Image (cartoon, rainbow, N blue to C red; front, side, top):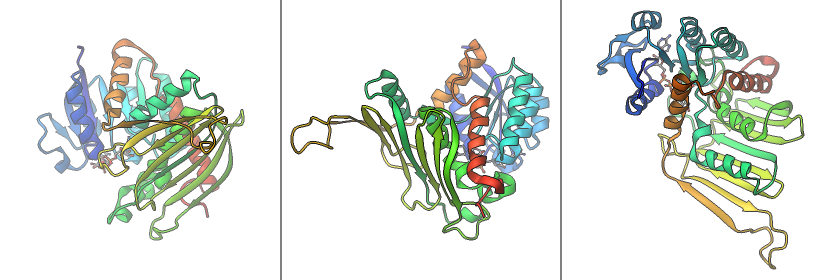
Length: 341
Ligand SMILES: NC(=O)c1ccc[n+]([C@@H]2O[C@H](COP(=O)([O-])OP(=O)(O)OC[C@H]3O[C@@H](n4cnc5c(N)ncnc54)[C@H](O)[C@@H]3O)[C@@H](O)[C@H]2O)c1
């Protein structure tokens, strides 16, 4: 197995988690770790750097994983690409559309480099099974979808960098809702119209960012999606209904590190209007339950294969990044980001 020299920049929660997964993968040889807070570098055998530019210069790796706060992502990604490195970057792709476009442009200037963004939800087992079911044609064509992704915040939510607009670029929509937006694009295609939207701070009044974003989106060929992304779902929730001409799929729950979104399930129902009396509207249901999250492993493997074998990135391309950030900006509206005033 070819081993790619790799550095991880940003050794907070995600950087630490990816570090462990990359080590277990076997195809990544970590040669340096970087975080501006020296305490986050303690306990790692590799050389640690507090300055990412020094880390890139000294380690000269083949691969760079970028897991910093959103504000630092574009500069690190663009510099790494300009040095000819393959780059895996966390979502969101920067703070705004301009950041995402800048990274895409730098990627285009370096076609020899792989650039991938961490929209890992596409690799959750329920999503993989739903996609395969739709592609099989068994339940017809997708016509609409409803996605709800919500969390509760935390005692320190108001102090988190996620709600410091200079570091994050936005609130819950940009932080978590972006995953659901990405999935809605994945299942329905490109949205060219926002039919309605409301971005608000309903409960966390001390925040400069939104804690709730509703949107209705439409594709050019008339597929519809609704989204509610929020930080006031006091019981964590991940729900996605995908309605097709001959049936529908319900994704409920998601296995994550916090184990707080409930068991991950994919249920599908086939349209049956000739069901025996009393069964109409209660078609046979088929449910798959998943108790493991392998999304990170799948995601790293796709990136690894792209670097080693030149296979194209399928999920989390620079184009995906720009398209989803276009939607985020359009949902935020003229205010640019944060709650619509
Ligand atoms: N894919 C997912 O599902 C998922 C889940 C959570 C977070 N994320 C993303 O991962 C990124 C990190 O989130 P997190 O939860 O790990 O946050 P975190 O606060 O735990 O970690 C961020 C780290 O980046 C470091 N950092 C900030 N600026 C830096 C710089 N200029 N140079 C070096 N280090 C710097 C901070 O010191 C911190 O340790 C964010 O972009 C976030 O949106 C993705």
